View 1 (cartoon, rainbow, N blue to C red):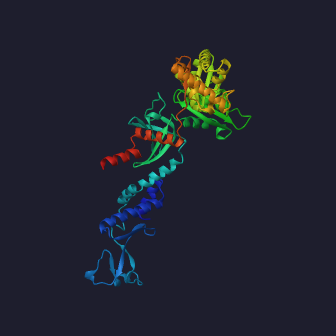
View 2 (cartoon, rainbow, N blue to C red):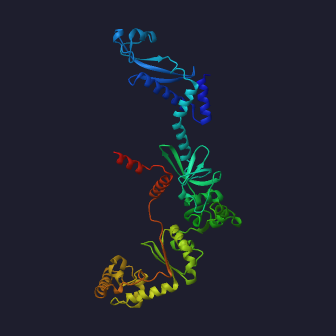
Length: 473
């Protein structure tokens, strides 16, 4: 075995790179060196010789019949010389002539090693990328090494990953040598090679932790349908079971709460509410707002809004600390939730019914029906569509709905804005509103999150790169 062959085997074993990749890189390196020496016009090929363990370099020349002084030795070979190499050579053929020389045929082992290290770097990057792109969406563990621009660099063994400051749970502190577990959210190819981005704040991380702790989830019996999270403070997950004999909430909680406690411990004490999922929006929202007791729910399916009435002593419990409980419930269910106390609702209902009775022909009973259909004052009736008005009991025809609309418009024309008062002008004490996250598709949210993480990590994004090019031009 030649020295070069030993180097190839050694590097392949140490770096985990296939022998063919190293040989190809070495052939390319020799080819580049020869091209530089012989000129861009030289037609060259380099091949690894398994028998000798060396790189053989060939220069292709055109077979010609020419006087020696007229011969272009870089690109041509005289017919007689060609036939010494190949007896069947004919004028016009392309003949590969082996170039002998210590600079190409036999390369110093140390030089070869340096060439290989440089050329296989791309192969190493590709190996790392291919390995981790398949692990995207998994929970991985590494060792904290250092902080760069406020972001934590995590050593995963074969490569490093970045845990941006914004993806660390508020209040968490890591020092070099600490074990760090996180969710692999993105694997991006950058000019400096593959870059791995981690997160500990994503709801997906919470879901993955439960998959690890709960065998029923891994087996597909219990499913986490939805998850909303405020990292380090509180989370809500909605679970369902495909087996009637398996309680999904109980499975996630575990015996004496051991399973959920393990997750809470990993998330530094984050409180977790586990609720049963339901395809009935009202039942689901009631569960999501637990432990608060809900008295009644008025649902506006068209606008995906629910007005939820609670007893006065349940209001603070339903809203939660700084609105956290209702905010997480809104994110989880996807509905806009308006929490209102019983006394506040009674006052608002009385005001709305009194307001609506100013319409000609509308008594208290009819006003209650209009209010139940979602109208708070005369102006709302005047500006409503006929389709919306036809949902009011007693006004289900176009004619009756048109009459009601015209009468409301007449009141507005006469009284102006005096009869537009309602929930919008009253004080907010006794009420609280929480809306779900703005409805963007998953791809848009993922791209925005990745751009923000790359920006914080100091990695140029495509937009930034194009901007710089535009400015320089």
